[in-house]
Image 1 (spheres, rainbow, N blue to C red):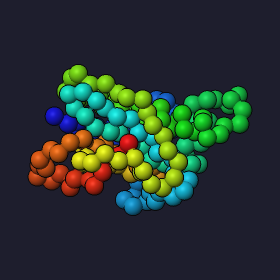
Image 2 (cartoon, rainbow, N blue to C red; image 1 turned 180 degrees about the vertical axis):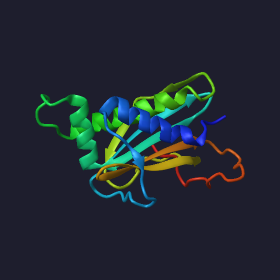
Image 3 (cartoon, one colour; image 1 turned 90 degrees about the vertical axis):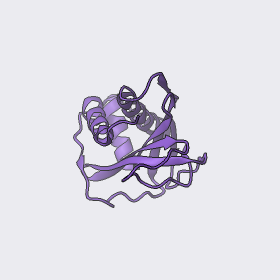
Length: 165
């Protein structure tokens, strides 16, 4: 059992709105292009269902999220605060999805990297769903990966070359 395909987008929109007070809308496909300033937060879901929620955004959007989370009196925000914010967003989206997954399952601690690549790898993951969303003027990408070699159902995306994070 996996979450319904619209669950990822719904979870991202709910977390973005509730946590940051910002609105997400569907972006034009291909609008997100990872570069050296990309911030990636990921949280692993472990247990009866195993997978990974990944949130990738430009540094400017990660910084705006951190500013919203830490508040106007937080002072200068750097790498640690932006990383914490993007990691927490991934964690909260994972938590929102966890309820629709087989039990028991739990979330691992989020991991965050800066840069265009997803350098961590374990073989045998499959991309289940991906959404490009816009928080004006930036675009972010949220994706859900499933661990293991699961037979592909009709319409599923092909297996990825690596299990990220």
